[in-house]
Image 1 (cartoon, rainbow, N blue to C red):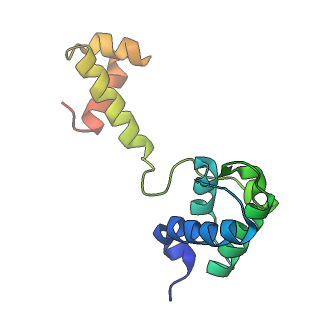
Image 2 (cartoon, rainbow, N blue to C red):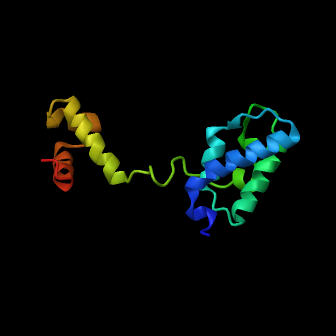
Length: 137
């Protein structure tokens, strides 16, 4: 069976399964996870695989007193590590973001390149180079 870090799509399903198991066992009325917690669970590498995830959720259920498991209920090693804000599937390359920004700015200014360049804070020559780079002529 592949490791959990190779099956990240399974993490929410497993986390909710363990939440159901342990909230019943400990008599808690926890309804789910905060977005920050789910993002943390999804970006963690899970060297201990499913068993580690289960222990993290069990501990969080024990420590949590709110309606949703918050970041403070996670172990320190998960809380303190840098996390991606977006999942790797939704991360956009810088060039893609720049291309989209240029396109939307040009649309806003009805194709007027001088106005778009001013709004973007770049020279008209720089805008021309970027248009050529991204095949937006």
